[in-house]
Image (cartoon, rainbow, N blue to C red; front, top):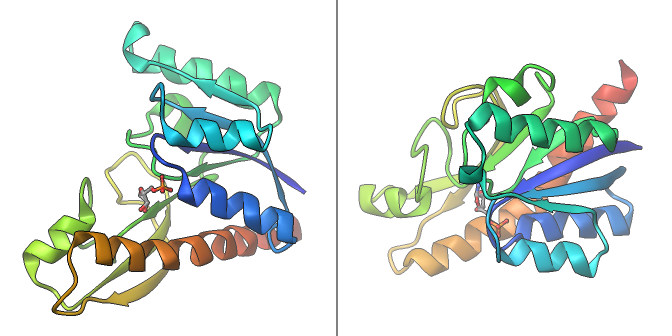
Length: 192
Ligand code: GRF
C-alpha cells in the first residue's frame, strides 16, 4: 500500500474520486495527507468528512516559496508520503519539493497537452474552436504542465457545448482516468 499526499486548491472532485477508488478497492493507496493552499476551499470539507489529515497554508505568509515548500516537505516526510498527487493545485512545484520527490509527483490537466497548458484549459479549447480536447495525466517537472505524459484520453466537443457542458464531460473522464493511471503507476513501483 502506497502512502500519498493530495495537493488541491479547489472543490476537490478529483480528490473525492481518488478516495472513492480507494474505498472500492480499485486503488491500492492510503491518503496520508491533504495539502491545501486556499483557506475555505471546498476540498477541505471533503477531507474532514473522510477524516483525512489536512494542512492548509497561506503561502504568502512564508518568507519565500522555498520556506513554504519546506514546511510541506516536512508534513509529507513525517507522514511517510511516497507519492504526491496534484488535483487542481494551482501552483508550480519548486525545487524544494521536486528534488526529493523526483518522478513521484503527478498532475492531471484538462486538455490534451501540449495543447492549452496553464489556466482555463477548457476556455482555451472553446476559444480555439477545436473539435477534440481531453485529459492528460503527467509527471511534474519545473515547467507549467510540461512534464512527461503518462496517459491521455480525448473528449469530443459538440457544437452546442458551453464551458459548463465541456467541464462536465472532462471531469467525468478525469474521475475515472486519474485513479486508474495512479494505480498502474503504483503497480510498476511495487514491481521495482
Ligand atoms: C481539474 O479539472 C484538473 O484537471 C485541474 O483542476 C481541476 C480540479 O478540479 N488541474 P477538482 O478540484 O478536482 O474538482
